[in-house]
Length: 147
Image (cartoon, rainbow, N blue to C red):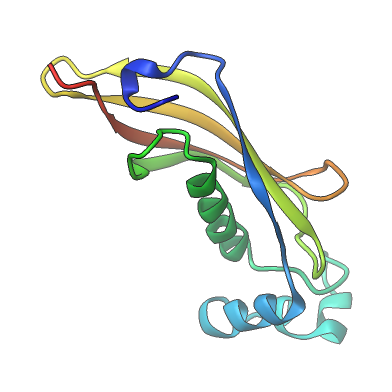
């Protein structure tokens, strides 16, 4: 079981549970945080490059964060971050899509002065067809095993 930064290894993989995205959730998130027609109106969305109603990219990011938490890549420790690199939205997330997240440890850097390390896990969200819809690479701060 992973409990500390010291337990992580390059190449370790994580997989989350799934989350089905409803039209109601898409509309609720968009109306509050990203009120653009292609996130709020089926007909208006058909006439955009998205070709239909789609979740806000920020909604997809929030769902992915929740899925990362459920994957527990750092055991019992919370997911503290210092930033995110390589954040990309590749495909629209549609009502009824079922997402899951997969991650791979790609970099581990122990701190020289503190009992922490920086872990880089490249996360990719996939839809029910196995298509990558979103990817991000957070800069995670993970506690090291006590001395």
